[in-house]
Length: 304
Image (cartoon, rainbow, N blue to C red; front, side):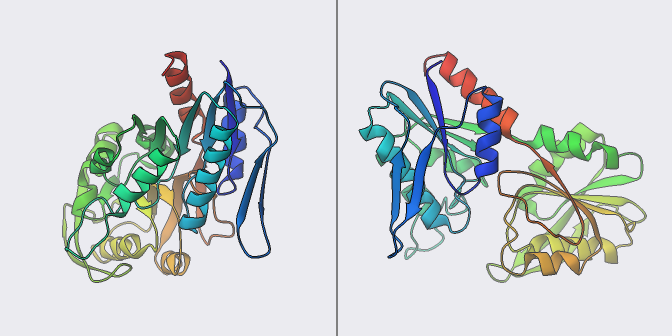
C-alpha cells in the first residue's frame, strides 16, 4: 500500500498513534508561521504517485487549523500525490448544517466545499454532530462511530443501579444506543437553550433516584448542557457517582469551571481532541487510532 500519513499541529499525538497503527512512519513536513502570522507548509517527503492521508481535527482555533489542512493538501497535490484523504476526527462547523434565518451563513456546507476545492477525494470523520451534514459533501464520506468503543469503556461503571441519561432531546437516539449496549434504563432531560453557552432544564423523564447516572453526548464545548443535566439529576435524587461520556471534549471557555461545580466523578472521551491536563475529576481517554486505521485500510485496499 503506497500510503503516506501526515499530521497537522492540531493533534499531533493522535497523528503519531495513527501512523503506528498503520505500521508506517509519520511523514515529515515543516509547518511554521512567519512573523506576520502567515502559515507556511513544506513537505519533506516525496509523495509523487502516492496516496496521502492528512489527519487534522478542526479544533479551536478552527480557522487556523482548517487553513493548515488546506495548505498541506495543496503541497501534496502540487507534489504529485495520486490521491488525498482528509481525516478529521473532530469536524468543526458540524453544527452549522442548516440555517434558521435568512441572514445566516451555512458554515457546514462552506467548509465541505473548501475541502473539495482542496483536492481531497475522500473524507473520514468521527461522530459528526448531525448526520444531515453528510448531505453537504459531494465527495465520499466515511462516517465512523466511536460509540461502541466508548460504551465498552464505560461498562465497568454500568452495572446494576446505573442509568443512561440523555442531556437533551437531540441526544436521545445516541443515549438509546448506549442503553441497549449496556442493558440499562434510559432517562431524558428536556432543556431549552437561552444562548450559545447557556441552557435551562425544563423537566426530566425517567427515574434516576438512587441510581448512578451515565450522561452521554457527542460533544462537550462550553459544558453548559452537561452541567445543567448533572444538576438536574442531582436534584432528582441520583446517587453521588456521575459519569459523563462524550466523543469530543473541546472544554472551551467556562467548561472546566462548570464541570468542577457539579459532582462529576469521571469523564470518558476519545482523543479526537488533545486531552486537557489537570482536570478536577478523573478523565479516561479512548484512543481512536485503531478505528481510523481500520477505515483507512479498508478504503485503500479497495483502491478507492
